[in-house]
Image (cartoon, rainbow, N blue to C red):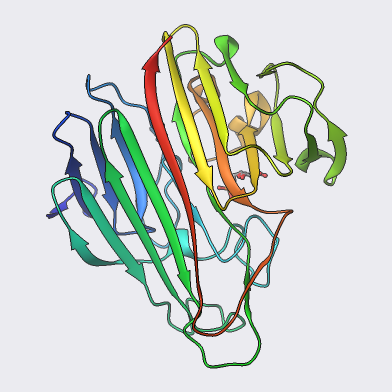
Length: 282
Ligand code: BG6
C-alpha cells in the first residue's frame, strides 16, 4: 500500500472501482493528487514544490492544525501537522487512514497532547477527507484548536473561474488586517490577489471552471468558515516554492474552522470535520 515516491518520500496510492484515484503522502497526511473517473487531475501542486520534510508541500491539501494561520498558540503558521510525519493506521484500495501522535517537540512545547487522524477515500468522481481530533489528555482544561483543510484546486484559467455560494456573506480580509467586509457579488470572480475568511459559510460551495467545462462541488461539515486564496502576480513572485505564472491555474477554497473557532474539546472527547469533492460537467 505504501509506495516510494520519486522524491524519496512515502505515499499511499488509492483507486476507486469507478476509476478515480488519489495520492496521499505520509508527510503531513498531504493529498497531492486526485483524479476523477476520466483521469483528469483536480488538485494543484506547484512544479516548484519542495518535498523535503519538515517543509510543507506547496499545493495539494495541507492539513492546518492545531491552528489556521496564526489563530492559535503555536509558532508555525497553519500549525505543525503539515510539517509532521504521519503513521499508517490502515488502508484499502480506495481509502487510507493516517495518524499523528505528535511528540512534545513537534507540539512546539506549548500545545497539549492529543491524537490526530486523517482519512482519505476516493469514490465515483469524488474525494472525501476526514479530520478527527481526540483530546487524549486527562487534563481538566479543554483542547482548544482551529483548523483547515487547505485545498489547492487545479483549474484551467483563473480568469474564467468563479466560486458560488459565498454571495452576501461577511468576510475578514487577510490582506487588510482582517478588516470586515461583505461580499455583494453574485459569484466570486478572481481578478487580483484574494485572501478572505468567509465567516459561517454554507456547507455547499461550487467552483465553476468555464474553460475546463467542469464544476467541482464542495460539501464540508463541521468547518463553519471558508477561505478563498489566490496569491496573484506579486505574491507568486515572492514565493520560492511557487511558479510566477502558476496563480493562473489554481484556486484555494479551504474548509476552515477559523474565525468561528476555536473548538474547545473536553478530555476524552473527539471532533470530526470533513470535506467531500465531486466533479461534474458544466
Ligand atoms: C491561506 C492564508 O490559507 O494560506 C494566506 O489565508 C496564506 O494568508 C496562504 O498566504 C498560504 O500560506 P502558507 O503558509 O502555506 O504560505
